[in-house]
Image (cartoon, rainbow, N blue to C red; front, side):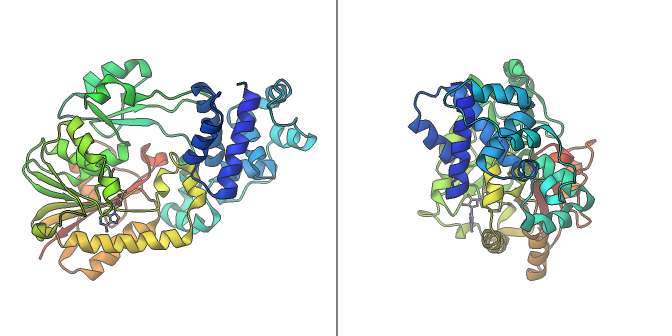
Amino acid sequence: MKDGGRLAAAIEVLGEVESHRRPVQEALKDWGNAHRFAGSGDRTIIGNLVFDALRHQLSLGWQMRSGSPRALALATYARLWGQGVPRLTEVLADDRHAPEALSEEEIAFLSTDRDEPAPDHVAADVPEWLWPMFTDAFGAAAVTEGQALAARAPIDLRVNTLKATREKVLKRLGEEGAVETGLSPQGIRIAPRPGAARMPHVQAEEGYRKGWFELQDEASQLAALIAAPKPGEQVLDLCAGGGGKTLALAALMENRGQIYAYDSDRLRLAPIHERLARAGARNVQVRDPKSSSLEDLEGLMDLVFVDAPCTGTGVWRRRPDSKWRLTEKALGERMEDQARVLDTAARFVKPGGRLVYATCSLLPQENGGQIEAFLARDSRFTRGSAVASFEAALPGKALPAHATAEGHLVLTPASTATDGFFVSVVRRTA
Ligand SMILES: C[S@@+](CC[C@H](N)C(=O)[O-])C[C@H]1O[C@@H](n2cnc3c(N)ncnc32)[C@H](O)[C@@H]1O
């Protein structure tokens, strides 16, 4: 395929995502199945076009005076990717599969920055209904934070210290441009590449198959470090999902003590068995919600880790379509889930134990708001400090800019060069 055909494909997929509110990965997969002739290089470029268009949907639409799939794809290619109008004109002319030629208006909009400044939420590429929550969270930094959430994300890896060292993995991935992450001592990063470039498929590496590293954003690595599980402790990972945090906790515990990994959705839990085996994590007992209960753990845990179900506003870089699909109703439902899961988690914490609550959302309602409401509901718990835990776990590292007065930590692409993440610690005192 040539770029003209790829642009036409991107427009088709964007149309599918918009008109049927379909997850972008599904729409791309269906397009690929229906166009078997497209090679893996074509699919990468089409995917990059579609993802970038969705990341910058509002600001590109503002510039083009249209949010149509065509306008977004053309502006992504000519403006975001820096190909320019002459190259785009050439590309459209030289391929019979390309979209039709540029109109005079499109040439003008693609060529010259719009005079009047965009409204803040448009400049930030944040849905308008979420903007008050964003400004609530970030004040004067809200536009910068939104823009950083619209950028491409790196590939982050967590070195599995049960099997390897960071030096060893770095050596293996050196050719891919892998470097140490700035905060997590187990983190390795491969920076995002621009335009049409493809990211390496690290899961095909021998080191991945041998369990030397896992794919995990640095923010999640930091959440596990802040939870600070000690070897020998009793830990419940209540929302274990596929086990990303479980594996990080197991490595920090050096396979000593016991982790109970639970999730109310057994399908989400399913991949954990294979991942535990690959990582050599031997201190994890998986509790399947269908065949086992957690009753025997009540009041006994040193640490309950709650990686709560959330709206995922912190991971828009990786799932840009979710930014536009999110609804007020879904936010309300997640907030109900969060309150419920916090009350459940509280039952398992022993007196003197701690509960660590994390989300990959940046909305105050899902974060500090939930913790404050929980503390008001359950007088056995008092505020701990994720900030103090950060300082203890990462001595000498600068404190994230959005730490709150209550001691909660907010990580963001703009301030910590990680995914957006929230971490809070509360302690059971009675
Ligand atoms: C953010 S995801 C977990 C990701 C996982 N910890 C990881 O690191 O890969 C949140 C999980 O919470 C689970 N969940 C939602 N409500 C729950 C509940 N009441 N009890 C336990 N798990 C719940 C969901 O099924 C989902 O897998």
